[in-house]
Length: 331
Image (cartoon, rainbow, N blue to C red):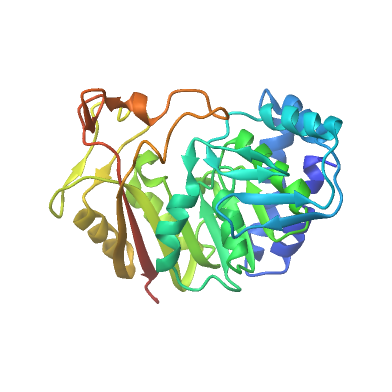
């Protein structure tokens, strides 16, 4: 069932006959390079875990609940429950969620539903939209977008483990549903597709060495008049101010620029966006990001100053996340 060369047949056919057709010639080759020619070292182990999940009938799905919920008309047998639990545990750590697989609750490190609840009221109606979700993690928000009526959702993230977690959901929800996960970085996507009605980039900008280049990439993916939803770490400060950590930030090495909100607004305007609004500003809490039985490694409490939770362990301001909504200016 999980022949990775077949998982994307539906998407590839769609791309060939849609406004993404300029991507069509290289998409299958890109997937082959990532998943077949040079797979992750644990790929066989993860594929086996997916294959060992029990086959269940009469599956129902709920994409509009806090947890992406899968349910079966019949109770699971003891053997089915063991196979389900063993398979899902083989895909740990689970960082983005939550999910519920037939009564088994996956309490993920991040309460991604809280972010969705903050962002969703400020979005344009997602009904019938073609959406790109950049840095989609295990695909939690992709499922919420589909539940909100999106015509098709494409999530991209370079993590192969996140892909396996996404496929664990999709194998039950329906392999032909118009939602897909591609194991790519944004900079690997063809430039200037100008195809998507909405582009989301949440939790990515500060990982990019050149945030301006990332904003141009996001703009290039959007059609004229399309909507950008950008969520990133910010700091207090005037227009023109941004923080570049000397080394680590909250124990992360790959953090480059944390702008002030006025600075980020200026960046967006300079790149070619209009109707720029900061719609949410949120201090990440220890209840939103924490270790759980499904993610047993260090989490936010380990990254903050033990004597001052308003500071990271390095002495920088603790994580503050801003969400901006903007429109691609018509040419």
